[in-house]
Length: 234
Ligand SMILES: Nc1ncnc2c1ncn2[C@@H]1O[C@H](COP(=O)(O)OP(=O)(O)O)[C@@H](O)[C@H]1O
Ligand SMILES: [Mg+2]
Image 1 (tube, protein in one colour):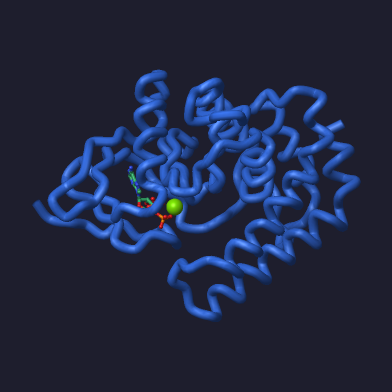
Image 2: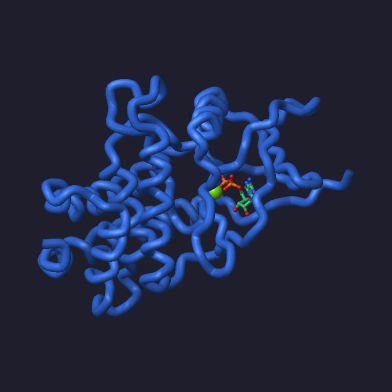
């Protein structure tokens, strides 16, 4: 059967579709990802690929999920953001108290931007790309998601704080943790800059510099508008 390259990701070269499967070169994270996908299956979480084993080329085989993955970050409607908040919550809940979560509250996806979400009928429908997943606090994913779904320094501030609230409300974050959301956003922006500084992922020097600069720009924008975000969440 023929292989169709699945471009769009920025990290893993060689992801392809064969029939109704995806083949992904294994990585150092594969073992954890396999266990995570099995856990999600056991716990009845349907909005992620299933793990089907390894092929002869040593690649991980996953189910191909129908739908669209956005090619770039853009402005989303409140309906889309709320649907993603519920999806993220369902994912975290499916990992809570598991052996994989260990001493932590949940397993975090750690890269839950729109670029790792399958949309159907214009709505977030499934999560993909669990290579960064590790035990952690839900706030780590909420911070990253708030940034990548709702905050953009190149757009007017206007509706952004309200949309972070939409995300956090749909997620159902406990009142006591809402104070920590803005710090979580700022933390993820700095962590992203660090990631692109240190990563061995193959990128050109120009791409690397751009992604680091973007993360710092977003961090400065969030810092400047901190009060507006905090007020919306209060
Ligand atoms: N299970 C899947 N179902 C459908 N498409 C997928 C699936 N896994 C990956 N893709 C497609 O392949 C692209 C790259 O895969 P991804 O796992 O996100 O790699 P990267 O680590 O490069 O971000 C995605 O943007 C998506 O378009
Ligand atoms: Mg990806």
